[in-house]
Length: 450
Image (cartoon, rainbow, N blue to C red; front, side, top):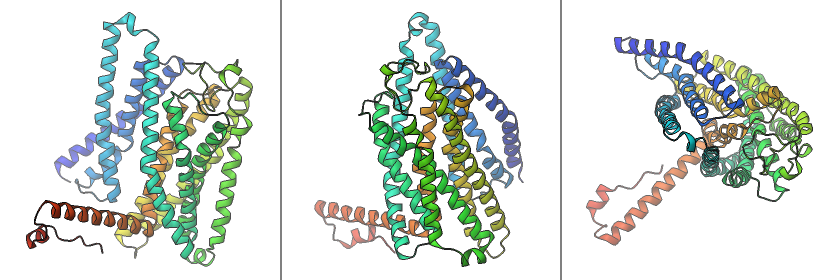
């Protein structure tokens, strides 16, 4: 190992060992302060802490790179992940530090005017715009990717159904249902979380929105079990592998998720005008918020139900996924005849799936536990949904690495797009001048679509 690589490795290790526990402590302190009395400076500090935690969580990737003398020996997909997670928090930390400095300056320069309650409204409006932006981004990216995956898996299941394709098809359907109801959440976010749509749409949209989040976790768990059994018991599992079993399991998972989320109908929201004991956590208690206005009696039913969701539909699937993928990686690492490229792709898929599972679903499920401990409806639950919303964008990555048919479909779409761009360029050149000359053909050769 060179001296530069050693220096980088030492700096990374020291940064991680000192920074991670301090960042966790700062995160807990900020959460407590915001829970007691939310102030703009504390919210900016919390975001700065989250940015640092994000940076430190993925810093071991850079440690591994430095330990390998700056040679990238990990899956290619992790290279982009490490670059993004290394530099994005650096710039976001700078932005949050600038926001903190501006907050402190304005507080000192205009103490009376700045202490006006209007600033909380502006801050809330900014948060709602952030939520709306995430919803729109997820919808625009996730919808075409999931439609393409849905068509591909339908073709595969129609030609030769396999358990893994049936489970992936159901995961795609879950994401498509989620994306179909996302416009309702966009409308809610654009109205500053005030539910202005008809009453009957609230329980429907809430049921579909939340149930598909949890069915996604269940199908990701089923996929992890399928992969582990296929590797751990290849002969026995190949003999007993039946698509019918995957169909039965899919029906059971849909039923399990739907039954648990029926709490949306058991404890519906109450319009603020009819709710005298509405929680005072929201800055404006006179608005009607979909599935967020609850009486004390309703919270006594709802909070234990949310804790059950955390335990049954998050913790158990997460433990199963960790067990299956850790053993999946261990078994593949010990196979002598498996090619290095296939081994790395499979390991990258397992690690990526676990990251998607934990990053997307942990914040919102943690809000269930925090709400149960505090005995109230946490105000930041809406923003914990941001990571769960992004799951619809990240699932297509799993589809891409899981299925050769999806990779072929994406390549076909890209090649078709290149062909159309080439045709348009040819037409534009023809209308502009001598496009049919041999010189143009030499400088613009046709694209090989094979």
